[in-house]
Length: 325
Image (cartoon, rainbow, N blue to C red):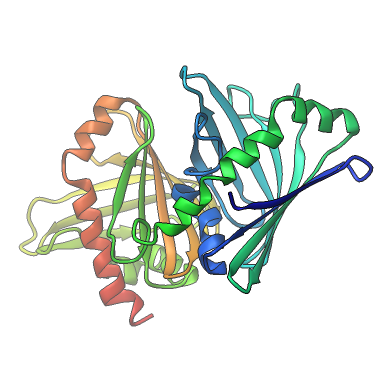
């Protein structure tokens, strides 16, 4: 069990949990920064978490839900108040209603996660600040103390897994639900470099190509919220043109943007793509959460070889763009 102490201070309205690991500080930090790793321990074993948004930056937000053994779900959120890489991050933690908004019937808490190196590895100290003694007692009565012990008891296994989420593992696709798919890859480059490569037309034309033998014929980038982008491709012979268009719905440079996506000339519903860039040990974790209108369209698009095409583009991004940026 990694937890070394649990201190309750009713006077200060805090609970402080300290846990130590035989893992480097960077490895421990990345377990919280990467939603694929975080959801493997943020939640007791019988109530695993699924993160559908994780903006690990000041001003960002995370949305997640825990699923019980009977299929029941409990949703929550983090609002990031501060992020100091490899040192600490602070969030407002609360419960969410069915529509994703904060649940007014439940209290929210301020949580500070502090990270330190130790002689044998690293330590995370989690201090939870409550709004009142009644709120503290309410959440303890709901099993918060035991839930945290069980959740953090899973972290040793997560931290020992050094191969699942590193550079070289390629583009990974995770089906989250009937309508949600998460595509992830670690890119060898800084967040600023990867962001620029997604927004500079000259750079986009060099890597956003998919398989060999194609070129980007149209590259109109959406610069501001409300703008429309247009991307079209064709063979080197100028044949078989196709493309996508959509609207930029939200942008927080250089770590997050949300767009719609519609295939040009094809009727039907669009998808929503949420791009998030997070610094990790080997470079930048690129994560795209795709929202489909239904499972049928989701499966049709995945069956086209979407993941392989994205991997070809991202490999080209590393090889031909980031080495020269």
